[in-house]
Each structure stands twice: as structure tokens, then as C-alpha cells.
Length: 155
Image (tube, rainbow, N blue to C red):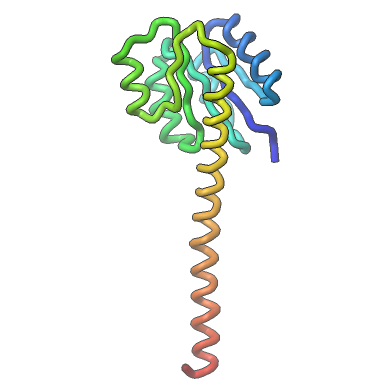
């Protein structure tokens, strides 16, 4: 299975570089993007992943991207980072399902803990979805096999 991936969308190159170093030091694969469109152009991750997202981006708001991710990639938790946040924005982000909302500057260990929890959540969501898909088809197949066995035994 591919490594766990942490995607970072932030228009500040210094933030992207700093977060890449943090991700690598923590053993995660980091991919960074300067805009929402660049991130959306990337294909879906095959491994558990999360998105570290700035609230303010050049091409759309982080909150709008969060909504899109929730629909297109529901197993990808979102962690917001911002230097210009307010209570209203953080409440909207959290109500929309954000895993965390951090104000810059933040301690690396706080972000690393948030990412660890988000990646675990992503893994559970992916595992649950795969189990549900397997479970339904497995039960249908089991029902068909039992029905034919019962029919052949004339019960």
C-alpha cells in the first residue's frame, strides 16, 4: 500500500516548504499546491490522506474547496491553517467537517498530532467503505448460494 499522503494547499511558498519538511520528518509523503485548481487537477489518492488547507487562496476560498473535497473525496479529512482567521470562519469550517482549525503560527507538534488523527480517520473511512462494499456483495453471494442449496435439497 502506498505511503500515507498529506496534501498542502497554501499560496505561500515558504509555508509549503516548511510543511514539506515537517511531513518528511514525520515519515509522511507531502504534496504541495499553490492553488485549489492545482490540487483538484491531481487524481485521488490511493492511500489514506488528509488535506492541510489555507483559508485564503488566490483562486477560491478554502471553505469552498473544503465543500468540494467533502463531496469528491469524502475520506480525506481537512485541517485548516490560517493567519487571518476569525471565530465565524472557524465555526463554519468545523461545522462543515474540518478536523482542526489552527492559527499561524502554530507549534509543529500540534499540527503533526492533527495530521496523525486525520490520517487515522482517513484510514478508518477507507476501510469502512471497502468493508461495506465487500460485505454487501458477500452477503448477496452467500444468499444466492444458500438459496440454491436449499432448492437442491428440496426444503
